Amino acid sequence: MTVTSGRSDKTSVLNSLEHAHAGLREHSELIIHIATGRASSKTDLASLTGLSRTTVSKRLDALTRRGLLSTHLGDSTGGRPAMEIGVNPAAGVVAAVDIGLAHCRVGVLDLGVRLLDARYVDIAPDAGPEAAMEGILAALAELLTALDLQWSDVRAVCVGVPGQVDAKKGTPIRPVTLPGWEGFRPQDAFSRVCEAPVLVDNDANLMALGEYRARSEAVQHMLFVKFGSALGCGIISNGTIHRGADGIAGEIAHVRLRGTDYGDLLCSGCGNSGCLRAVVNGAAIATRLAAEGLPVKTKNDVIRLAQQGDPLALRAVREAGERLGEVLAIMVCFLNPELIVIGGAFAVLQDDLLAGVRSVVYERALAQSTRGIRIETTTLSADLGLLGGGHLAVEHALSPAGLGTWF
Ligand SMILES: [Zn+2]
Image (tube, rainbow, N blue to C red):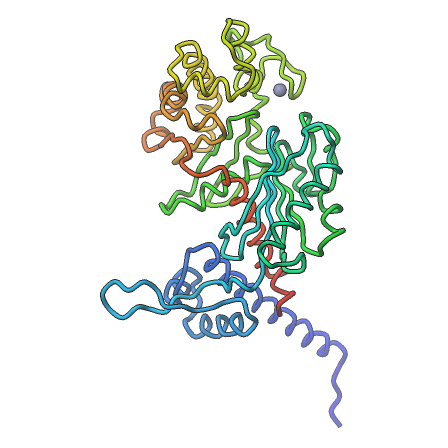
């Protein structure tokens, strides 16, 4: 008679669970490399992951059997075209929402992070989160229908908001300019229409991720500044978003400027005086220029005048760049980035904005930390936030936990 102890039963169950989890981890790692465009062949995958070619083949077969991968002939460069591996477009989609102070845009992306369709949603900034979510869900439902998809095809959702986000709870902390959003859970609104997990993140973080992933060069340490109606900064460190202990790393808007003419200006974001945001944001610049007699009401008026070469508007933009440069010079000393990218509505001003930023960063930061640094404006589209949100949602959908729905 063979006696099996309860202890060895338990050990064998634990071993097989551990084995299954390790398998999912490898499946996840491989398919995320493929989805994000870092690999399209077994050779790429073996070299990126350190797994043997046999293990790579076995995992790819399992992913293909579950409908997650497809192969196609790559471009020929003279010889026989090689087989390329891609994420199966029919495997599912993710949804991304980009809520700004002056806009709201929603999009649907496939699991290869390609934007299939997107549209603006007309919501009043002071309408409150429930009304906003109604408009967002209706717009996404229309996009899905137009793409011949349903909510059940959505594998994950990412919502970007213009303010601090509690990284642990996934809720906005203090988007003072969006009334009623503090502690609001977009997850609850989505749970009425789909079962997909819903991630919430700061909009500048998502734009930073979108910019970082769109660049083919090997940048690992990058700052992305969003300068438009509001001001924010996303930090990419070692290739991933750096959020800090509470999810508010990069909140440069409320760093205090001292010893400037702006030290007494009240910040509409936090109520303190002399914040960077009190000087560097579209409304603040428009107010200052209007006081000097220029016909401006909004940030778009400021941008238009600067593009037309108005000397007062250009001076204001350059000054904003210099003030921004003061804070970025400190961040450069702390974080030693290789690249600073400025996005948001003011990015279209390119060199007129960059001149101020560069002059102060190069003057104030350590020469060793600015030697190789590039400071640029983004060249990417208005969908940067949706693309960053799409990347985060796809990575969640294809994480070991997300893959469990297929395995
Ligand atoms: Zn402030």
